[in-house]
Length: 292
Image (cartoon, rainbow, N blue to C red; front, side, top):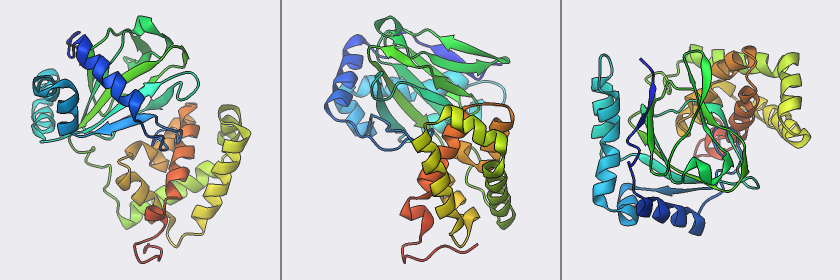
């Protein structure tokens, strides 16, 4: 059974899509994204704010999608739990060639993701939703208001946008995968070792030199040197994964993708080390580094 499926070509009507596009155009943040560390160009919203933009019936319909889509053998309970959540992490994202043109391949930390196209794919060039299914990469052609719902296991990304603007509403339902924030003393050490081996790997360095800019490569190395000064590298890595809900940034996961030749591993390492510089990860509230 495929972990993804296009659902409801008209999950949102044209007026709702236009309202969300206008909202992100009027007010959006530019924080580093957990996937690649680049500015995210998105507007975060809670349920009340979303209802104010598109109406309660439309929001209720979106919140029903996880259970409706993923109900089935081995999935019903988890999907129902995700859909029953009183709220979800939600944001409206804007892509343009000059700001955020793509999104590297990654997996999400939530149990279920709802991704709504806020414009027809024919209104821009590039910017296709890419998914890895059945051993191949598929580009999903979507119309305005169409929702794609998938589980956290789906590897996906957005191809480079070359013309126009692409907008989407992203909704994360349910808790991260069970292992996402489960760290032990042994796993902290293992993740620190995995990162050290990755950063010492010549093939990985060469791949990053081809994938990242020279300035980004320098930042990657500089941030790693700062991280090594921490009392417990493993504890900092744990904080990054848990604080930012980013299990795909575990060094062991990044290293696996690097061995498989995925360029996204370089972006993930760049994002991981950018987030490791956050004082909430490097330090406790008392200003001292955390224990091992």
